[in-house]
Image 1 (cartoon, helix red, strand yellow):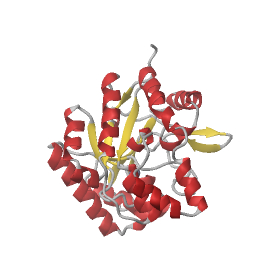
Image 2: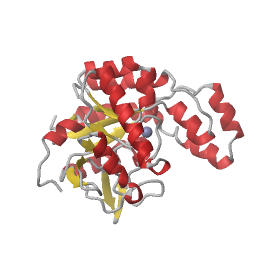
Image 3: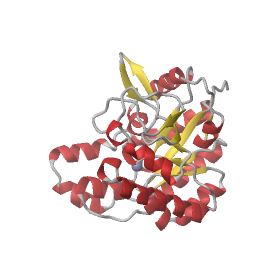
Image 4: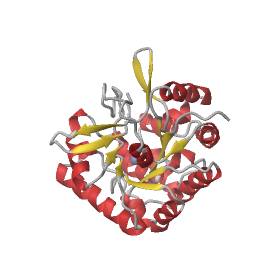
Length: 291
Ligand SMILES: [Zn+2]
C-alpha cells in the first residue's frame, strides 16, 4: 500500500476512571489496573503493525505499575512524561510544576533505565497564559514538548501558534522543540482532528481526509488515551458518583462513551495505511523548512 511521510503516534498513559473520579466528582481514587490492560491493547496493535510510538506516562501510573513502564521500553517505544498527578499548568505554581515534572521524569528514567526527552502537559494546558510552563519544561531538562493545541479553544489552546515541529525560545530564553498537536483549517477555523474525542467522534473518512491534508505540509501528531478503547462498564463507585451529579455533568460524562467501539478499528486502519514513528525520532529528523 502507498505510504505517506511519517507521522507521530503518541499515547497519554493515564487511568480514565481515576482522572474522572477526581476531576468530575472531586473524589480521590487510585489508578486502576485498567490502564495496564488497555495500554497493552495499544502495544499489541503497534506490534502487529510494527510501529513504534511515544508513551507519555503519568507519574502515578509509573509508581503503581512499574512493569508497564518496563514493558513499553522493552518493546522499543519511547517513554515521555505526562506530569505526576495530572495537574494542569494553570492549577500549579512554577515551583509545583518543576516538582511534578522532575519527579515523574526521574521515576520513569529509574524504572526504565532510559533517558526521557519529551513532555506532554495534562489537557494540553500550555497556553499564552501558562507559557511560563515552557521555561519549567526546559529547566527540568526535556528536549521537546508536545502540549500545544493551536486552536482558539474554550478549555485549552494557543490560537495562531506555528503548526509544524519547530524550535522555540521560552519566555526566559531557553531552547526547546515544540510538537504542536494536529489541526486542520475548516472554513477559517482550526479544528483538532487526529486524536482523543475527535478521533472517536469523527467518521473514519473525515480523519483520513484531514490527515492527508495535513501531511501535504507536515507530519501529523496523533494522540490518544488508553481509556478511549475502554468499552467495559466502569466500577460501581463511579456510577454512585454519577447518579449524584448534575444533569449537565451526567450528559458530559456519558458523551465520553459515544463511539468508543469505533476507536480500535479506526486506529488499526490508520496504522495499516500510514507510517508512524516516535516523537523523538521525528524531532531528530525534522526538516528546517517545515511550516
Ligand atoms: Zn492526560
